[in-house]
Length: 90
Image 1 (tube, one colour):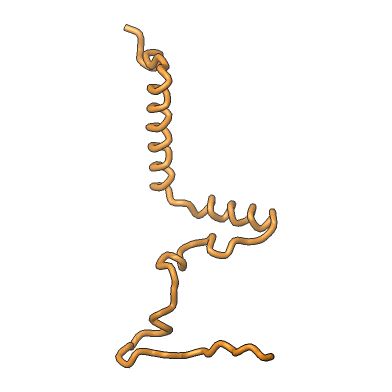
Image 2: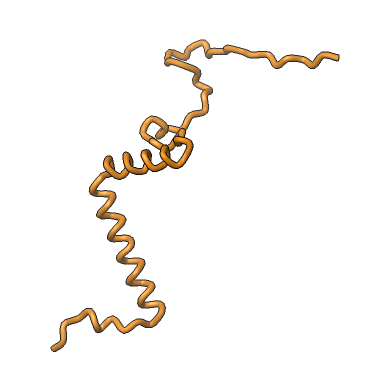
């Protein structure tokens, strides 16, 4: 018994002027990502992490530090830590 083969269609809409297929599923940020096809193995992952570290954006780094600082402050408030040690003594 033979199984039927799937048919392949190369349909293109009549008034479509772009390149490629308009029905191709692709994320809009795939061109900018370095982790779409991650390298295999420990050495490849290490090299990819180093490349990301060297090519990072300084604004993003500052934003992450501000967010971490706010979260630490909220955590200290939640556990009842005495925050007066950070203020100068009068």
